[in-house]
Length: 382
Image 1 (cartoon, rainbow, N blue to C red):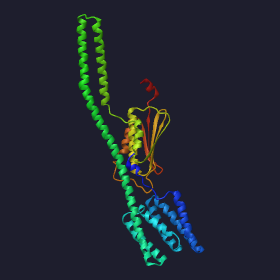
Image 2 (image 1 turned 180 degrees about the vertical axis):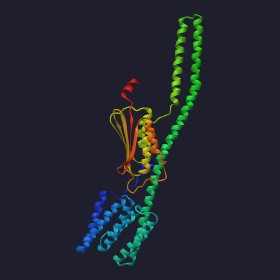
Image 3 (image 1 turned 90 degrees about the vertical axis):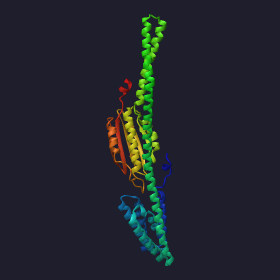
Image 4 (image 1 turned 60 degrees about the vertical axis):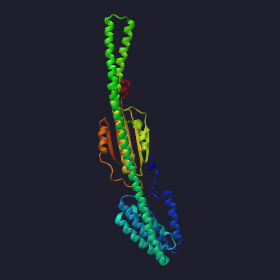
């Protein structure tokens, strides 16, 4: 597994089991510090709304994130006045760190400016101290830190997607180099070994004919016959070896575990049913389809997990590559991909008599294909 895959960054700041009790304590302390029934009810409603809105900052679509940030900020600022001795300021500061997940560019700049002024004024009024106005300067610091974290995650996702592309390119380059070397060896064997054995076979046949004409005894003829037979068999084996070397190298199902293990992300492989037999072309088509699907997952579902499932049936093999979509606060990597991967997979699978389907699956994407297996009668006959 690559270093990029090992260098995991958290998808969210706190897990759910930590957020729920933490916000419960913050709200309870704030309500406890409030005097009067109306103020306590208002504080409870405002802070609960703010805490719930904060959780929606992680959700799509972007309009929901933006509305959640604004609601959390406004209700948090109002709660600061209803509970001056409470902890509502924490909500305002935390949501400021989430703002870059909802806004970008100029809207983020304006939000930071307005929130800085509003938060500084709120703290200054509550504390009745001019130095309290400086508390607003913490908002830009939180926003800047969040922007840096967001950009770091995006660059990591882009590097991960490019790593998947590079790995595929290296594999293709190594395969091309191996094919070239095999072709060179095949030519050498054909030019040297095959020609030599063919010449030897002709010479032995000529000697056998002369020996028979001179009526030489079996002591000489039998070794000549054996030598001629060995030469013919060696020539046939040499031609078979040359033909094998000329055949293209194919990667099949046996290479899938290594392919999944090399995926720069969370990927697992499961196999169901008793294994059958695929033709070399079908196995290669499955390998390439899974490879393309994993590359697309790295590109369009950064931070998500991928499940590769193989299901063996009496007459076919089904394969499903399913991802969970981008992780929390993650976005698909742009600027990579030719858009021809799915069409290429479909063409390759169709050429071996299989079928391919692709489409949304929950929050992610699923590629399914099935290819025919080699019948048992053909296996026995071969």
